[in-house]
Structures are given as C-alpha cells and as structure tokens.
Image (cartoon, rainbow, N blue to C red; front, side, top):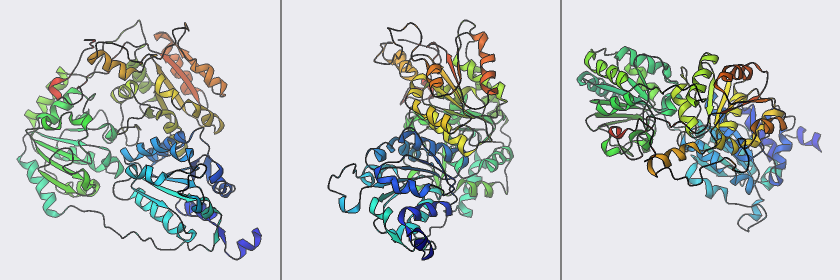
Length: 572
C-alpha cells in the first residue's frame, strides 16, 4: 500500500503538511502529540525535521517564539485539539503582542464532529481571532499546499506575527495528489514605500530642529535596519533612545545612545524624549510603558511617526506627520543625503542629565544584589551572550545592567509581559542558534511557571545556562505594593513559612531532571559560581539568593509623566 501510494503520487494530508513545511525551509518544530495530532507526528518520523517535545504546550509556544526572535526565521509549533490548542493561547498572544513571525498548527476533531461538542473539540479559530494575523480552518486536503505557503507569507511580510492553521483529523488522513505549486490566493500587496516628499519632509523637520531625538522600537530589528539606523544617528548627529524591544539595535556604549526609555528606562532618556522639539518615532508604537500619560508625553515636540502598520499611526499618540513604510527603506533614503547639524547645546544638556540622573545603584557587601549578578555576568561573558529573561524585576534589571550591542541579543516578552516566558523561550533560542551562548535570567516566581521544560532541556541536550535571581517574592508586584499600597502583602510572598531554607530547592529539582546546579548565598561565592556555570558543558542551573532588598529604579508610575519619576525606595 505504501509503495503504491508513493508511486502514484498520492499522499496523506499529514504528509502533505510536513512536506510543505520542508519546502518552507523549516528545520525544527516544537510539537506535543495527542489523539487528533497522531497523524502529524507519524508524518514527522523520518521527515528530517527536528521535533522538540516540550513538557507543556505553552512551553512549546514560547520556544517557537524564542526560535523566531533570535533567528528572524519563522518559528513553528504544533499541538493537538482541545486542551492542547488552548494551552497555546498565552504563547500565541505573546507572539502577537511583540510581532514575532510564527506558524501554529493545531489538530482538530474530524470535520463532521465540529460544532457538536465532541471529545477535545474547541473552537480554536474563534478563541484566537483577536491574537493572530490570520487563521485557517482547512476543510479540503487540496488546499493544504496553498494555505501553508500563505501562512508563512503572512507571518513574515509587513508587520510580522503569528498565523494559526487548524487541521481536522479527517483532512490529515485523506489522500490526494498534492499540487505543491498551487498559487496563493492572497492578493499581492507591495511593501508600502515612503515618497520622495515624505523623505524630504523628514529632512526639513531635522533642518528646523534644535533639539531632535530619535525614539525607535522593535520594528527596526524586525526589518533588519539596525545597521542603517546606526549610520543615520551618526551621520545626522541625533541622540537616540529605544523601547525594550529595540535594545541591541545600537551598541549600548555609543555616545549618542541614551539606552531605553519609559517606566524603568533611564531618566536622561525620558527627559530627552519629552523635552526635544522633534521626536522621530521609527518602528515604535507609543505604548503606555513608554509614554505614561500620552497626553503629557513629548508635548513640545513635532512628532514624525514611521511604521509599517497603519493601525499604529495615531492610535496612541497623534503624529504631526505620519508615514506608512518599512523603516529599512526610509533609513536607506535618509542616509543618501545626511544632514549633520551642530547640536552642541542640546547634546550638552543631555550630558548634564546623564550626570544628574545616572543609572546606578548603591553597592552593598552584605547581600547579593541582582544588579551585581547581571553586571558580573556581562563582564564574564564579554557582553556576547543572548539574554532571555522571564518577566518581573529580574527582566528590568537585565535590561538595565547587561549591555546589549547587537540585534536579537535581548529576547523579552515586551508587550504581553508573560511570566513563564524565560526558560522555554531561551530553550527555543538556543535550538535556533546553537553557536550562540544563551542565558535565561529568571525570577523564582517566573521560573516555576514553566519549570517542567527542564525535562526538554535535558532530553534534547540543550546547552542552556539558567540563572535564577531568587528573592522568594513576586518581586515586581511587591515593589508596587511598597510604593502604592503601604507595603501590605497581597499574596506576593513565595517563601514557605514552614520551611527554614528558601523554597523550593531549585538545584535538587534540576538534578532530578539530570541537570547540574549550584546555590549561591554569599557575595564572595558569586564569581566562582558564575564561572562554573559558564564553563560546565551542557545545561546548568545557578540559584542565586538575592533576597527581596532591591527595587527597580528609576520608576515612572503608570499613567504619570517623566516629572513624577521615583528614584528612591519607598513603602509609603
């Protein structure tokens, strides 16, 4: 039967799917099997595609996102119907929030059972509609080559994002002679381009500005425009700041780079963005963590907004001049005829803000401060590691005290801010780029949300380094309690009052998965422990007990402006 099917060109739907993935250059999928997905997994056997089996579908979704974030290639994740599909939702929403190119394939009950509350049936198309670029329910096996080709096109083109394909079991099992050259049905839309008048308008605005500031976001990295951006700020002599998603596009130590702005960004970056007379917003979306109250953000500036997604234009902040275009193309045009103006007074003012409001902390010798851990990690890695935090205080400390010098070096759940992101996303990043040193910096709360992925790390022999900044609290929420709720604890304490030592014992858990680890309690042990982690072949978990002593500062309270910056710890 198998031989006859091969000879006459007949293929099962599941085999067509895997063949189409290979034609798209897919080398890895993060996939968890189930009753409705058995045929897909059978087709993956001997396909040549590497299958990474996560220990939870959410872990697989974050891993596919991490794969895409670090490589720029489309990440692929598969799950079965019902709970397998619903377990993808958080990871899928994370990719949507941060514009990450991914394709999610979910198995579905047979088409004849759809809508009848069949076992493990769920309307995953309906559930995910707000958090995907596009979705497909495949009812005809002959549509598979076209649909998969379209899914990859949609995921990558324009503003990147996730695409969902839902595959009923009967379609996976049906047979046909596939037409792999079937044309896509999505109409071709040329990339939006800035006109010559648009480019000249930007130049004229720069000519007339005395205090310009560039504010850029993840769109610069997504479009591959980091090199052109660096050329732009140097040739135009314009200071620049960025969002969390833009970190790495400009080397951290560049004299014109002000680091990142917003709630926990540098005070001098916030001052520059708010007190400039021209704000160039390139590939950024004026999100609330950057602007605070948008009505009081950059009120004295002429705002020029360049973004590939028209839905972002004037959504959060009204622009004086908006251009829908790929930022790479715009920068290339601007760099053809640079305008290098003298901003001596403006740059001097920014230098003064740097001196008045430096990004520093008071060093202590009696405890291990999380900032110190990250600083030493930066120094011991020579600044070349890909850093993947979870979400919380450790995420902000990582962004503040590790110096990022190239694109796709800092991978973070920026828009969704999802705890549990760090470990699986780092796992996916290391699979995508095994030659790079990848370090998951996590908090004890965030790490526990997908701790089971230690099993995947060990089974797949993923050389991932994991650093837990363990303070026994949900640190960021506790920080908010300290500043705005009088320090009253509303379920933010993770330590077990019945256990004397910190809880849980992460090193013992890691060893249970076959992964070596070490605990650190004293500052004098920190360097040797970091070196042991970095030098040990294969995965390693380092549990650093920092205690809850530090707040992430500076901090602009939600909805406030830069003049309300908090720079000292408070429990009032």
